[in-house]
View (cartoon, rainbow, N blue to C red):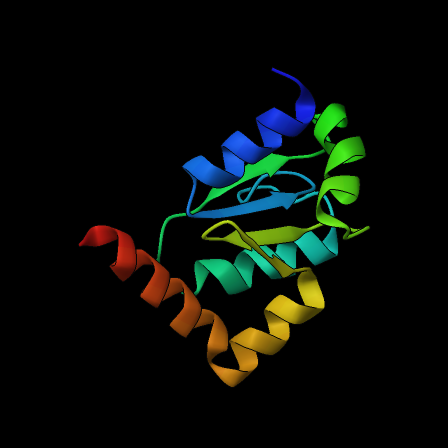
Length: 108
């Protein structure tokens, strides 16, 4: 399995996944910390990949997603965006709605 296939499998197998620097318990950058805090406030489980521990993904994902920075939030196979988009969505209520609707879709 090449790195692109690995990324595609992670995105397909996790309805909510964030590619970040560090872990949710110990973020290694302020943007990842803010994004995880926003995502956690939605109250649903999510997967994560620490790109500092996975240099192959850190190098390839920006090309795959056409998004140059981390964190990157993916929901139901779609790139949502990075920290500022996540925080904007949290502020206007769209993040919680997206997360809860996506989780409901898969609990059926």
